[in-house]
Length: 438
Image 1: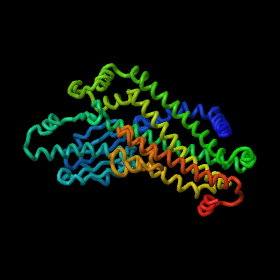
Image 2 (image 1 turned 180 degrees about the horizontal axis):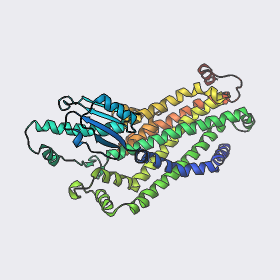
Image 3 (image 1 turned 180 degrees about the vertical axis):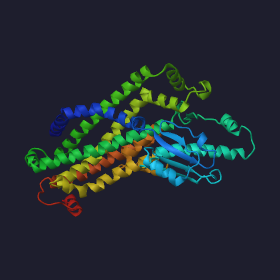
């Protein structure tokens, strides 16, 4: 154990004391926040200039009701020959020409857009959405119901559904949207760490094997101790990083968010935490958003999520790192490891694909089984946990995960002790099986 401890400390200090680790640890949460808001920022700042479009309306009912906006400016052309106007449009600097047939109400497909440059979905949607509303309004007139549009607008309603867990001792409000979002983020974190840090273990062993350092070390340390020390050392680095992020998340949840939140929203969040429902809150409050904020601001809930993330992170990493270590000891070059690592990466990728099914139904049979199978359970189970599942399922999944890790360490150790002395030959799966029987 003393030798394993020395190796763990060496691996830990080698990575944690680097500036790159500190910078990555601090910048990764910021990067995740930027990624989450990137689509909105792109939509805001990536808008092009306003496109001018001439309109030939043979129906006489569309062009006058088209409204220009920051994306499209409509210019009505009274009458005119289509081919002649197309030629004028091409010679001008306008974006294009919109032709509307005279029977557009009965035949809404009798519309053509001629562009002088590449079109886009944004422009086409801005045109079709307006024309659809105008055509629908004209068709409503055929039913001889006055003010039908106003009637439909008056009876339109937006339902805000508040969901409560009845199987808990305390009936607490829950948000499926927030649970799905948190589950996807947690699953992605597990996916990222299993692949990245597992590869770090493999690459480190390959480098030391090529420099013949391992051959010197095994004269004083057993190969199994060497493998365990390296795996646990890199695992401690990953756990340190997640622990730091967890503390930052708890601080943000407990102090930062309440400090910047408007008083009316904060009052709604506190009311939901106290067990209030939509009937006791203002009618203009978005209960889905309030319930989601209540979950994010629950420090006890966040701390529980972080603790489970550390447990599944540790178990999943130990399981996969043992396999990566066996592969690293078996080859001389990283290029030679690609064939051997394929069976390792397939379950990880499969688990990430199953993670998308959690949003639809976290209790579907496929999702439940994959959250129990050790090779997929770290990612899938962390996707399910925010939705609120039975404690016995989490415990069973952890027991199976760590039990499989013990078996995998024994298997990887037998390959590792032989592979570190093999040079100059790319091993096959048959060779690995033969090493297991030594």
